[in-house]
Length: 260
Image (tube, rainbow, N blue to C red):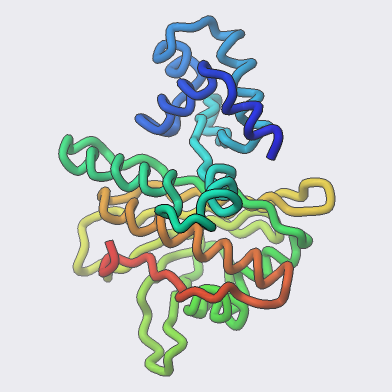
């Protein structure tokens, strides 16, 4: 937590976070231009933000894209703000407002990234993501597939109806470190849009695991709003289940078109 406050104490670093809030997923060159600062200085500030987990870096070919990570802000809110019954998840609220701006301007919807740390092994996290019984516990839906590249997967309700709310295809599966799936709630025959893509990256980090969830190719701001609420809830439940054996006392989120 100290590293977060140290990072936020500098006005330049707060400005960089503001720039990423305005336009997430920027390269170093774009950030240098947006704050009118030398490359070396921006790099040093970004390194501090990355170490504080306020910024996540994702490689796309030769480029390194920088994304705002709301988790540390959420942790601060939970520790010092939520107890006073103030509005929860201010960072996610900012993302929601940004989505509304995109809806008004017609600009393409950005990628959503969420990073969390779980006291578990990579194998345990992989199993939690791919085992139908475990996903039913923390998500409220059973994710069903053989998890082989090219195979289909289904997000099935566990209320006895067996209805499928989300489905897709497994694009990549490298147990226990990387899983890439398409994510859609509209049958192919009824939709001309390209399905969104979710990447789960599982990285051992000392005695814990760093789990990065990247949700990209979002079709509209409404879906961004839905997953901005859904992923934090789902992943908090996953973390609680693996670390304590219990899920959190909250209703599971559904991230489908009917909720966006």
